[in-house]
Image 1 (spheres, rainbow, N blue to C red):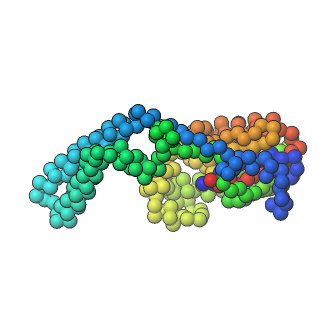
Image 2 (tube, rainbow, N blue to C red):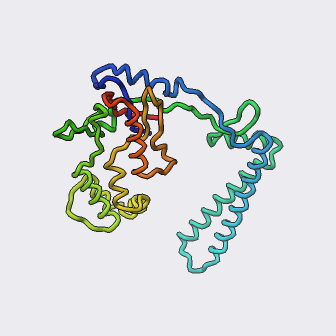
Length: 284
């Protein structure tokens, strides 16, 4: 997963340079140097009981679904294809129930349940607690610009231009008119089924998969929210020697675009205006 962050340095960063300043700031946060910790989900004395309860609940759900499917088989209006599909689903349910019974009836059922949990990505610590290992690192690889190449604007007093790096005093929030028009057109096409005649990449796919895309776009609630989300290019994190690593949007906070803009402006205001900010693409 790629994330766009902004790194503050005393000197300008050029992609052809070694950009030692950025390396010195960002390297402590890579996954190789970062701490690995174990997050406990259930203690040793609880996880087995909870897992047995999960198996039993799953089996009861499967039995109920099987009963409902068997009732459907009594429908004389079913086609052969529909009846075969129902029978296939019943066979799958029987197999699931059989697997659960085999685990719970095994004298080594604790070990069987452990294997089941390990297979789906869980782990156990030395004390037998159930959990997951997490790396506190922020990235595996980073690049200047990367997939976010030139997603920042600077103003030199007369013109606005795209860049990967600029002095803090020259940075501005800016919405490209063409980008805005494109996202507005996409919203109208997908949400309102209205084609305003504006051509954009993947327009045919938007028409073809309109129904599925509509559900995704409606998560933004309004056209303004949708357009702003993709045209006001706010980084998801901020890094400087003075303030350290600060998350602006950690994908779980559900901050509005206005809240994220305010956070970013406040972070910039705490830095020397003659210092530089650089777009860095980090990849986990």
